[in-house]
Image 1 (cartoon, rainbow, N blue to C red):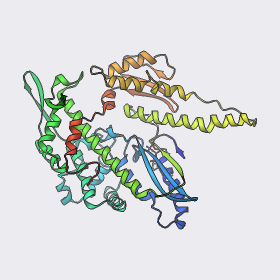
Image 2: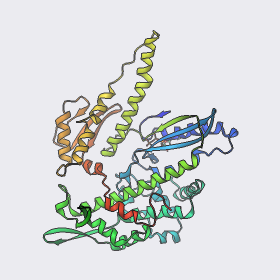
Image 3: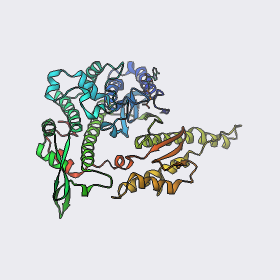
Image 4: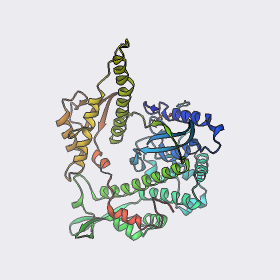
Length: 441
Ligand SMILES: Nc1ncnc2c1ncn2[C@@H]1O[C@H](COP(=O)(O)OP(=O)(O)OP(=O)(O)O)[C@@H](O)[C@H]1O
């Protein structure tokens, strides 16, 4: 099954119905069948968020495998694609971060919250950028209790669950770290202003607070196999970046990496619990986040719409082109359906060497490149492409004619979002943590 459609059109709800139907008709024959419905609340808490188009929008792609043995459903497993990591650190107006943060803050008792140094959602930069901390009709407390129950159902121990909350809490504290700067040898040098936050993160993640501060405020260069720490100064910044912006970028990179590693780990636990030992065939259900055309479209929307374009192309090929070929071969009377050439739009976005995403990757590696130079290159290579529109005025946007209609993308922050850098010194810092983020033991 391939579920396709605009964001909010009902794909995830349809997927649940398909899974519910297939699992329930075999329930009588297999008492031990572990139901995927029991893990959906975990996926929704950690992978769904309020967007402009949908209060419960999936921000990752799911490929659910329903496994069958001798004609009977014996279990399921999940593959995950494209978690929208940027949402952990940035939300557009009227949008929210992942549900789990708000559920945790509303649902956890005061005593446990105090141990995690937690306060109300409005106090966290990573939660209130969209100005929509409360979501009408959402029962955060009940949803938190349900989430807890589901985490226990898949076999997580109390200390593993506590570590999950510690990681989520440390992400929130990371977003609230403030910086100051001072001048040293005519360079502007960064320093962490809110040391209390850094100490809390150190204690929650069981890492040294001093090392954390050094890693954030320094750049490491390896010289003759030795790591040398330099202060982050403006000389290291790419064009248009201040020391403060560079610091924020480092914090964001850590927060995004922590969340995505946690998400991957949770999926592994879910799969360990759901997957059967034996199977002979599989039914696949693909549910990715739907096509988006928002007031402001950015890098995330380009990735989402590209994925949808690929799926639509696959659908057209298998459902229409191949069927038509077969009808022709068998000489069955048939009124040919004219298909739009989706392939050219895909080429515009991803072909080598000058597809838009290829240009973006190249530019991301060039130290002096900016969003502006990226846009100029796109205009240069594609201005005459019928699927691409260069704006008449010199504004930082380009438009793509997708299968579902034209979408205009603002290039602000494209390079930054694409970079998603995770430096080795940060990896090393977390390998020294007593909480193994990828094992949560
Ligand atoms: N069959 C249905 N019955 C009742 N409500 C539905 C049904 N399908 C969709 N809805 C309503 O529409 C909302 C959006 O549906 P859903 O989350 O499935 O959309 P989606 O296509 O998966 O969106 P996205 O691409 O943003 O993840 C649901 O939260 C629900 O309120």
